[in-house]
Length: 109
Image (cartoon, rainbow, N blue to C red; front, side):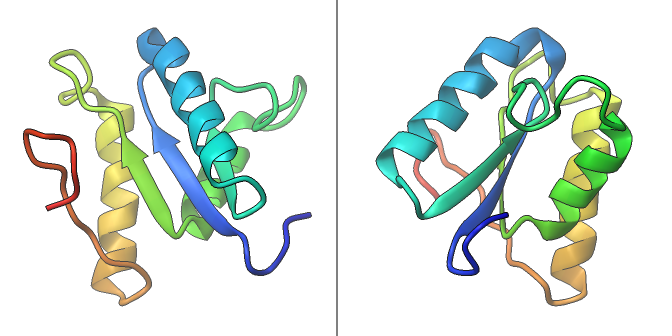
C-alpha cells in the first residue's frame, strides 16, 4: 500500500518498448525516492504473475495522477496507447487531472 502523499505515475508503452519503460520506471523511482509509485505493465513489480493484467492496468490508470506516454513512430498508432491515453483524457474532461505534452526538447510544454 502506498503512502497517501505518494504521487501515482502510469507509464504507457508498447510491449516492444518494455526495456525503455522499465528504465523510465526505475529512473523516476530513484530520482523521486519515496515520493512516487510508478506503474509500468512490463514490470513484474507492477503486475505479478497470475494477476488479472487488464484489471491491474485499468485500476492503475484510474488511480494515476500523472501519465508518461512513451511515444515513438511505432507506438502512436497502437490501440493500447490510444486506449490508455484516452482514459486519461476522459479523466481530464471530468476534472480529475490535467494534460500537458512534451516539446521537442522533452520538457513539458
